[in-house]
Length: 208
Image 1 (cartoon, rainbow, N blue to C red):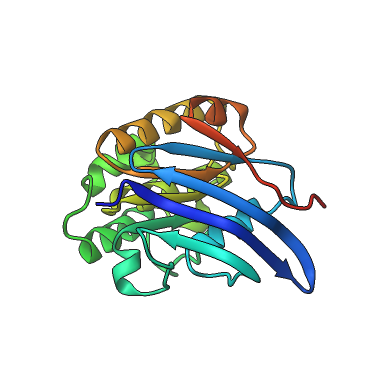
Image 2: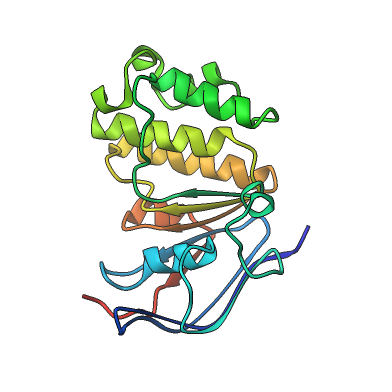
């Protein structure tokens, strides 16, 4: 296992010819929870996409687990990425979405029933995701991300749609994840989540 999980050096990203990130440097070590903060348009989501191997850089270097991130099976066996709300499978319930995740990842971090309980979804387990509230769908997305085995969590505004009580609970869940040896990098606007992180990194992008 690499002590240095993420290493970003002089990263510059342009979208449509406009700079989004300029000369960013960031390191994240094993077991850390790092919160990236900044206003909308400052490149937080772009940084996460770069780390997930989904956004090319104009210049600079990005390494995850000592290698450039790659959108392939070996990479995704170690990395869980929560960004925009996923495209839910038509006809499947919340429970069935988690069962599908557990079937794909037989060494899941928790059982489906445990995930439904932890993410306060047990009473809505048989509902289709699109019949859930915004907060319930966000909890389902988080449940899927934290149910599957991983070493690195990349979270883009995981607090979206969550009430204050569950945001505090989410901070506890992320602490438990790092206590197990995992590493978390999240972009957040939530002061409480940022305060619970072990380190806060400003995003040196260009605000909209």
